[in-house]
Each structure stands twice: as structure tokens, then as C-alpha cells.
Length: 419
Image 1 (tube, rainbow, N blue to C red):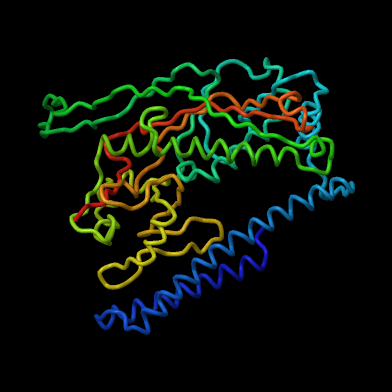
Image 2: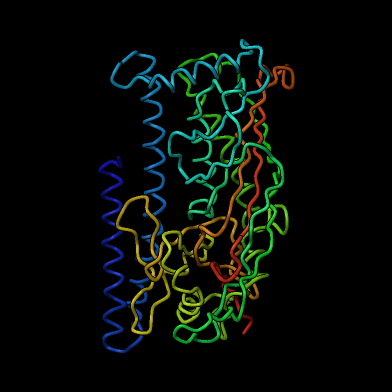
């Protein structure tokens, strides 16, 4: 639970926004532009909101680290009310033995726990029993911890994509919709039903198993010291490192995986504004056009999001509608996305910056974007790689792919115009 400090900062953020919003509404009511004084106050309030965002994030990160340290100390002090759960304690002991080389195993594989809900909605396509794998004796909670850190650095993974978890890495064929059925004429009463004027069009999208790996080196002392959260450290380091590369590929890769922008841009070019601001920045009309270029079933989906880079999102705060009201709204719930035109807005560091002819904003139903993860995350250890430095080397390997499977317009992109 967030502390009073974070709540006060959030309340201050909402108050500043309400004051800024009043300036815009007063100017709109009088059908005039900002006075120099109002413009100065508006700019100062926008700057303060950016500062508050940074402080809120720092406070939450500090509180998270403090809680992890307190939990480690309480576990060391044998305080029963804060002691690790049996599953986590067993997992930590098992991993620590493996990290010390006491189990004789060189590798461990952590898999998704099919009996509990993880941070994302999995559709498990595995075959056979995981119990036949010798490494499955390790509890699977660690997998969800690692994926949670991967999601932190990948905006597209926060937008509710469909995640398929498969047992093997063989190529997976997914039907890809490129056109829907259309009826071109009415049928008469008791008459023969007419065939569809346009049949649904499908093709096959291959989801492969591209490999992502990271090398992590840990001091021997961190492994031997039971007060150190070894699981948390490995999950954070591996999750963020893998997420940086995998998240970038899910957005920008041309073929391996087929990134979101590649899949979106080639099938439906999105909205190209007739007139835009500097370097292809969108206007209010451009964003409304983009929103309503996505048909209602997709637009009303629970997985319907805006996705853009942080700097692009910062520019949204300065955009007002035709009567002078800001189209960006701060979230009233700490940790939830802010809103743009009433829909959740997620930042992705891998989205392109605003520029002429750049696809810098996407909007639509992200459940139609499929992410494939193969098995678990494999950790392997070596005492020899950095023997002279008394470091234990770990490498973490994840296999996955991604692609937009509904290319009829489920997700569309804004392209910055050059005029």
C-alpha cells in the first residue's frame, strides 16, 4: 500500500491539474487565447506536474526497496509475522543451493505456474506434464516475478496482449485475419440465403522461438549471505535486461519477431494528418481521427490503449479540444495509466519519437497482438567464467515471438505528416 507521502504527492498532482484545467476552461469560455500571465502559469504547472511524476515514481521505488530490505531483515530475525511463505522459502533455499553448486545441476528452468494467475493472462498450450522435468521441483513463483520486471520496461506488455505459453519451440501457426465477411444483399422471406459478398480472408502467421539471453555476474558473498534477496535480485536483473531487447523487438522488429509497427503499418497505414505541428506532432483533430478510425468493437475492448513514447505523451498535456479543454487527464488511482480522450495511455520507451513520416502513436485493441513465450526461463551458472574475480556467472535465456494477428484495423498508427 502506498504511503502517506505518495498519496499527498498524488493529491498535489491532481490539484495542480485542476488549477491548470481551470485556466484553459476560463480562456475557452471567453473565446480567447491565454494571456501572457496565464501562459506563464500554465507552463509552470505543466513543469510542476512533470516534477511530481518523477517524485512519485522515486517515492514508490524507495518504498519498494525499503520493504524488500525489511522483509529480509525480518526473515533473518525469525519474526513469524513477516517470515517468507513456505513456497518462497523453499524456492530461495533450492536456488541458493544450486547457485553454490551443491545440487550438481548446471541449469534450472523456471516455468509459468498454471495454477495461479500471473501478472499477465496466459493461454497455456503446453503438452505433457511438467512434472517429468527434473527442474520442475523448483516452485514457479519466480517466473512470474521475472516476467513482472520484463513488463515494467515494455509498454506493449502492459496493454493486455494475448500471451501464449507453449511447452516446445516448434513453429506455431496462428490464423491471421486480413478481411471480415460482408453481406451485400438482403434475403427474402423463406427464400434462399445468399452467399456472402465478401468471404473472410485468412492467412497464417508463424510464431517462432527467437532466443534472448543475458549474462549476470554475482559476487560470491551475495550468494552465501542468506539475508540477501537472491531471487529478487536475479529476477530484477534478468527481467529488465531481457525486457529491454524483447520489448524493443515487439515494437520495431521487421521480422524476428514481427513488431507491432511493422504489422500495423503494412496492413493499415493509420491516419496521416493533413496539417500537424512541429516535427509531425499531432493535433487534436488528428488524435480524434485516429481514435475513430478503429471501429467500435475494438475501440470498446478492455485491452484498448494508446501507446507512445514518454516525450510524445508529455506533448499530449498541451493539446486542448475545440473548446479549450485538455484532452489528457491524470489518473485518480496511483499506479494506473493516465487517460487520453478517455482511454488509458501507456508509455513505451521503444516507440519512435515524433517526426515527419514517423509512426509515433498507436491506438487500438492490443488483445489482437499475440506474444508467444516458450516454456520457462532457463538459468545456467558457471563458477569458472570469472574465477579470478570470485564471481558466479549466470546466464538467463528466454525464447519468444510476437505478431499482430488481426490486420483488419484492430490497431492503427498515427503518421506524422510533413506539411
